[in-house]
Length: 315
Figure 1 (cartoon, helix red, strand yellow):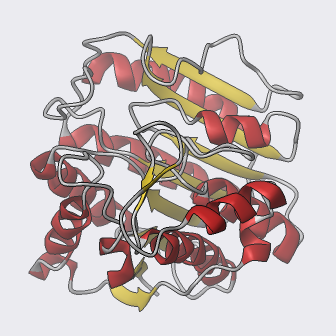
Figure 2: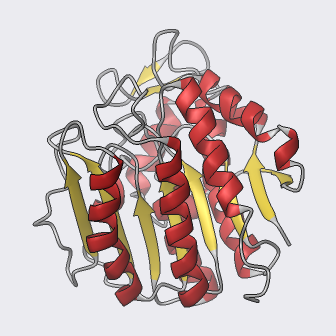
């Protein structure tokens, strides 16, 4: 067994506009990095199409209908002002995102892989049950978590989010569901304005770690180690899903944190140690943000290289 990467060329056809930060070049940079010789052991799989039933594990039926209705045959459709834009290829792209995330859960639950990385776009963690926002149409990480509960009878699934922006959509979907755990480290104050440390969820199943502008590696690691990792261990998840955003990197043009590539190695390794202890190493990691192509490529490479070092003795 090794690490599986799910991707699909349709994810390059979500084209929200020439100057939009969430560009196809992001995924191209990731795929080029992961095609380097060091990643030869990866198993590559085509992301299947997700189903409406999977999307509606999280999203309201009326909202999904509205997105489907607005999906353009030509030109653009704006879902939330100007941030979240659909082009003719966006519907298939986002359904491949959903399909990849759910297939990743299926693969690790079946013991086909140590872990999975979903190299897909657009990102998803801002999408709430009844609205798209922040470049995100459907919330594939949240969907994958509920898919795991419903399909495999799990009772505890965790999503860990180290994107620089708070995943308000995942928090909203999980807030009143004690079987789902969400922890986020994120710049604050910053978009979308949620993610206060006082937001705990119905059963202390929400853990937020706001980080100040200029936060460096030492503070990120300290706050993660003191707050997120102990809470995750206490929750004792049967599956860990990672919302893997790399826009807290010092080179990212849209944010103001100062993480480095090695911070992503560190946090990935810490999560893998907990996964080994709690859930037979099962991790599904899903690409979220990251808008410096250089930093996105190098950080993703470090993240996936660390996933590839999963302990083969745990099963």
